[in-house]
Image (cartoon, rainbow, N blue to C red; front, side, top):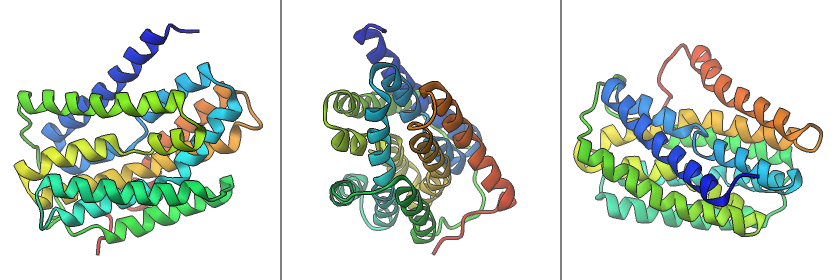
Length: 263
């Protein structure tokens, strides 16, 4: 068993690394690629790994199932932010998106969902979200200037949010912990910095990329929930990671790298 302090530092380091990596990708490849990385389970995946070490498999499965159930709430957060960005500044967008997430997560987590039903719900939400996002104004993307000072602020804000989420995942009941793991940390931090500097169209490209990355997020939790009752924890986690990595690649090949169709 790892010391509690070491586990917490590791978790927070992974969050910082995720924001840093997504920001560097934006510098080189643009908003869409940055969003796609942010949508993958690069934060919650390692958190789940540590929970598997600390907690019984059945409790982790319960947390993972609620996280999967709350996927539509996360996607609703993204869609509301992207559409609100066309009219409002980032504080209003974040407030509306967060309120939407909280209401949707509260409703979804109170219902009884099986693994298959939760997966189908999440997949349906992915399709709906992709079509509900606003148009980005262009199918291309370009490198983005992210000043060092802004990068530091991005990481600091993400760490503050992540600290609260991680504490809840470790100490609160599975229903609440699972909902907390579905909180879109990067999906909240990155658009709040992107909107005032680059505008609503860039924000739409960022969040469209985030939705694409969520395919890997859904695959990760679907495989984990499905395997944990029947396989060792390590095997279930490795399979879930493999599914999370493979899904965006398969989707990209299937769509021939074309943009997601948006309403």
